Image (tube, rainbow, N blue to C red; front, top):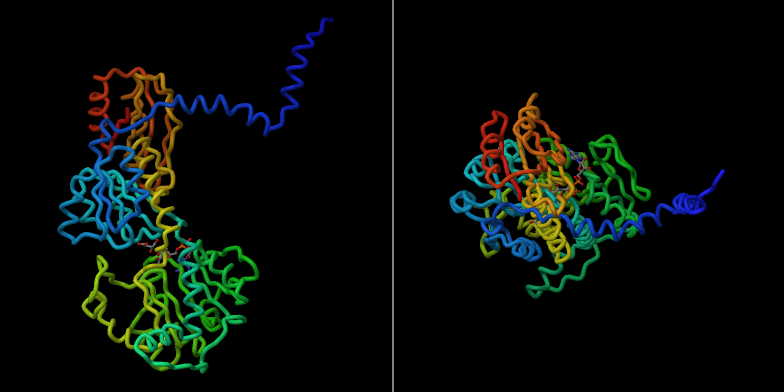
Length: 458
Ligand SMILES: NC(=O)C1=CN([C@@H]2O[C@H](COP(=O)(O)OP(=O)(O)OC[C@H]3O[C@@H](n4cnc5c(N)ncnc54)[C@H](O)[C@@H]3O)[C@@H](O)[C@H]2O)C=CC1
Ligand SMILES: O=C(O)CCC(=O)C(=O)O
């Protein structure tokens, strides 16, 4: 029997190559392949218009400008009529928490393909209507979580020591050195409502200060450190010295803390709300503070917030109870700055700016909060006769058969489809396409009953 030593050697080498080694060996080939991916873009990216409101970070502006998109940047949010006017011909919009993209606004947005919420919360957007109109929405799920958690830690200490009041007094010339009803936070109990990204981060920071942490959440969640989940809300309310809210704005969280909940709390407890303004019933809080039940509060978010920075905006005209709230002792009021740090804003700009660009240029919807998450690997650079078809449609039976029939004269290189409720999204790379075929493909897809939005990338 003859024996081929070189093939044995090869096979031994193959077997003895560790996963790490084989990964390393494949890098040059993969880098080469990546270099050779065709850069996809909409037909003319220079025609792409992006409206950026609410001082979205410059990192995002740079990402969009580098793509050649036209950027219209505004420091504040826009008055309703101006928003309706501006949104009607932009392809992408970037907002933070103030701009309300209601069904009415979205219906004006005839060219809008994608919305970037440069923040965590997406309650300011009608997500369902956006999906029905084929508009994908992206956010930044955790880039500002640490900033919020740090602000809350600062507020816990400032409330316990009445720092806000002492500072206001000294600014106006009053020296008032007191220790009555001022406390250390060590050994006190922090109750966290909503143990998600922010709540759990805060839990770790609070324990490092020697606080006991309990939390309440509608989900059963793993406790970090020695924190403890409490299932019964009333029992939970009665255990905490400090209560802080980190829940999204939903119908269930509206007035989550109101008169009955304040009554269930410990005498002299403190309340912190850096979630959404609808979550705490402020008149009930004012009442609980007036009778001494609640010893202090830090509020960062309000049912109505001014559209831009400036004096004389935080008044009773905005929220009827404003003057009563500002007249109470030991109340720290901040203008929705929980996530407002250089670190958070820069990271959010990059994260959401990149997500929008990938959606515009490649159709990649991974990370969208209202859309099926779909992505396809890049196209071979040599495939000059290939195009990518993006077909957003109603999720009804038989659609893919119709679409593939339309595409069947070409070679379907690869395709991926997924659905999210009533909305489905198909990406297909097809080759063997003459330039003149593109219009015909588009028109045929456009004529399908299930169609919501179509794009073709070259
Ligand atoms: N003040 C500010 O500048 C900022 C405010 N926020 C607000 O904070 C909220 C929370 O942010 P994350 O921690 O990132 O969200 P997350 O989604 O990671 O966590 C939210 C938690 O709340 C829980 N939850 C939902 N409904 C609940 C209910 N009815 N009762 C109890 N728990 C409930 C969820 O199960 C989840 O664990 C955001 O939705 C946003 O509104 C976020 C960032 C900055
Ligand atoms: O920074 C902002 O404008 C909004 C922060 C916020 O509330 C969020 O991320 O949900």
